[in-house]
Image (cartoon, rainbow, N blue to C red):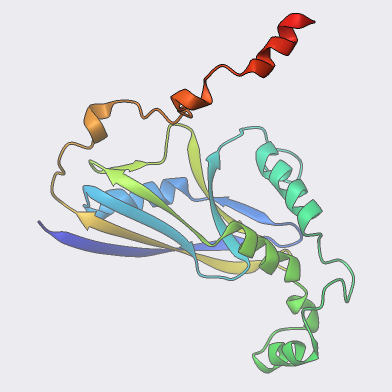
Length: 206
């Protein structure tokens, strides 16, 4: 059985002023196809600490902010959990040492470190997603799209999504577990849990 690893980098440009949702579904599907891997996994990961990867349905309708309705609903929820950084000292981060570090590494101004909301949202959401590949097809579901989210809206930024495809070029055995029978996850009551109790009679006596 041949085992392969195939990696590609997808370059993106985020607009700033509001979080950017990049739909990279087409690119990821093309990378999986180019990998030649028949059965395995595909991981989509952010190179950045203020970015996330999300697999979700495309909601089609787009508002004046150039966001799909479902994306904007998500942003509204995240803003309730983690408010936008709009005033200096809204958060403890960045402190004076971190701001000086930003200047040391060539940041254009202290304002570029005022992206604490982006860091915290990325922690909540996570920076990667992994999907399975079955018979050369990325198994993302019928309606799912792959979105790279840049939560950092301080300025326009260059971003990178890293795609790693791992697997084999060979067939796999039958995928059906237990002959494809539906797993019954409902609670099973023991006989003693279903036994008659004299207290039941109270309802009959009223």
